[in-house]
Image (tube, rainbow, N blue to C red):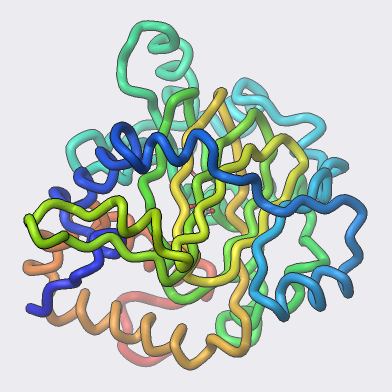
Length: 318
Ligand SMILES: O=C(O)CCC(=O)C(=O)O
């Protein structure tokens, strides 16, 4: 098995913990206090977005771009619990030790009961709500700036548009990662506020000569391009493919992970999808060990994709 030298890209639990530790104390944590804000724009047209940001691979926050969405105007945890209380969900799915199957109503009750108790914050991450509650999508109209998403051509509209919700409690964290399958991040903030830490796609955290992680070399490298910024309700973030991001919930928060595949990344996307499916089919036992925190998440993603593409998993040929 090849060992990934860059700790920012490793998915084993010890490496994930080492990177988290670097974010919470030491030189990286100090540098984050004064890291610059991301570029922010208001009133950007679709053409300006495409020419000034997407074509140049420049991250940007489009302030208030989704401010008129019904979800931004009207959603709360309680109103969602009324609409989809019986729906089964897996909370804390990004942690194999904490993951718990429950219902949406129970998740909201857990949030209320644990608030202020000092218990670990609860996070419903990467929720594929469309497999159970597709009507919620009506409150999150398609973004015109996301029309370039080539996944439409590959998988059809149902499988590509507005499908991941992230709902969690103040203090919840999504660890540093790059998105899978070479997709761009388009993230719309719906309720509450989130703090994002972002690094460029070529950022590297490697062990130094003493064997300890060389955080100073990460900070000194121009490739790191560290930024930190807050997303507020109605804001839409664009991060080109492979940019690293880590998220901290500043309040109870709901966000939509839109994602979009640039046609320029199509070949890589398809190779990564096929690679993942072959690894899952042919080597699941090893993956459960090497990717303990990701295995069930990847299976849930696969099930959601199959559902949305109407694929019958009991047949080899459709
Ligand atoms: O909001 C979060 O906690 C994570 C969102 C994310 O990683 C994404 O949309 O790509």
